[in-house]
Image 1 (tube, rainbow, N blue to C red):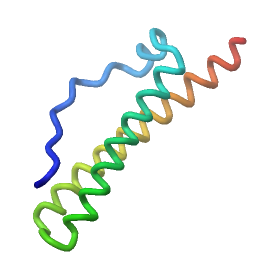
Image 2 (image 1 turned 135 degrees about the vertical axis):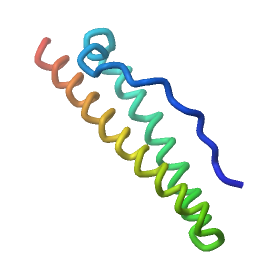
Image 3 (image 1 turned 30 degrees about the horizontal axis):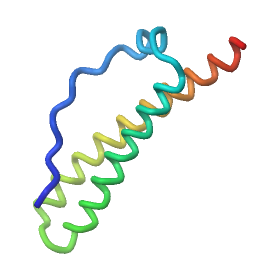
Image 4 (image 1 turned 135 degrees about the horizontal axis):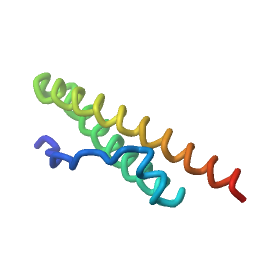
Length: 87
């Protein structure tokens, strides 16, 4: 059985998010994204041997989620560095 992810709501502009969110919330978002990437990677590993069409779809989804992880990681780093310079 393949993992089915729900469509996401459009991302908020990162400048706007950094104005309203604390650095800790960005870290939570990164951890959630890591969990998604880990799950997809596990599923991809499982299906690589059994079903190439499912593996192809999982690879495409994994690429998108890794990009999202990169964006959230950068946002968290920015928010944390901004918070560190403000104190």
